[in-house]
Length: 247
Length: 247
DNA sequence: CGGTTATTTGACCGACTTCAACTGCAGTGG
DNA sequence: CCACTGCAGTTGAAGTCGGTCAAATAACCG
Image (tube, rainbow over all chains, first blue to last red):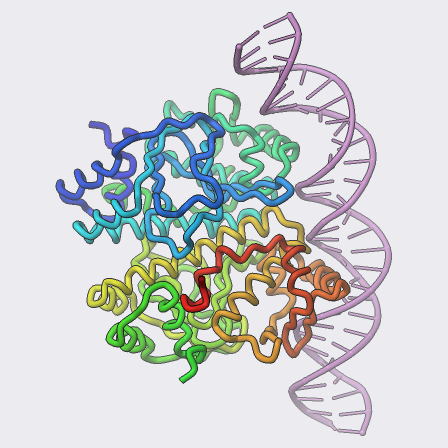
């Protein structure tokens, strides 16, 4: 069985943090009861929804979003297959962000009560889940820096470095290409840019020979240069590498 | 004894999430073994430091920061008295951000092992700590929106709304004024602006009669207008209100 | 095909930055 | 007491990055 298969990416990620027993592994798999298929652009969870369910991305790409009153939109986080959000009892009763599928995706909606029961039975899973959450917040902090202090070109390069490294970790790279059928507007919403400027930034990266991006997907042609432009240091993602792959 | 007294702000925040027994309360207080006094501008923790200690702000203001190679600086979060960071075992071995005192402050450096022992003895404290962490990440998400999609004026207004609401929750307001002896550069680093533009934005808010800001502190003259400018909705901070104060 | 949506391109505009000078204030030392 | 110093804040002018508007392709989809 392939460890990078979609339904197991979550397990693989947890295993990055903690070794799991067979009982723990099967208990985790039991969480994925009913995968839901959502089309690209669909709202998985809306602002104001109760925060009593967790969402696990199984396939595809899901984004956390916030939208201002006049329509300005910001993507706060990208959820890859295996990423679980809202897995802990929240201090807020209702969600203040939205979850939207960026591509056709499948997700599992898991009642928090089931997760609570799980970690009660297997306390070590609690640690693994917390580490998942901490990793998500480390990424969120890097995004603040990205939109706050990096130029559009730097931020775009950094974002692509981060996303591809995370995609590598869940085995999404196929033949040196990443599946990447985003609207440029969506990329712009990650970086706080207009889609028009996003277009020009992408062209700049193409002209420099850093990337190849078309409807088929994304290819990183010159990763060292891309990392250099973005000032990317993947240390904050090191926990994504399998323990075996780490020194 | 005043519940808003610095050394108890942390306890007060935990109590917002969960009622605590007397034994739990005294166990939490035992964590604060040796308060350390740090002068304004001092580095409490540097990039690369091991992530095996938590930091609890007791008095003053501490900031999470990231700095780019060429010196551009971004403040990622403001820690008020009672805020605990890095309380959980991290998936990263070393920290990728810094902690700096924005004012003369006192903090407690707490080995994560002590916290781990505490939550093992009192499992309910784990829930309270997790909720603390989730609240911090909710604030971080709002910051992404702030720097990504809000204008300088909107972002500044929103930041001031957030900070003052959080300061209210820990009783930092004195006689309608908030202690606020920041450099304008520090505010600018929260919002991803230059200090010069920060200055002009503050003047705009003064001219509109929203705020009074000088060396003595900050006064909110027109909170409704400030909230309107910033598009501020304090729902994500509702958990900070004491349970008694909530419906 | 035609209708719709995404990308691309150009021209112009505005928010914010940079550079530079100046003010005001607190501390320091003569 | 007053120069001297240093630093934060303020102000002005010029420049840049990125936004907005508008229109022309180019890709998708029934």
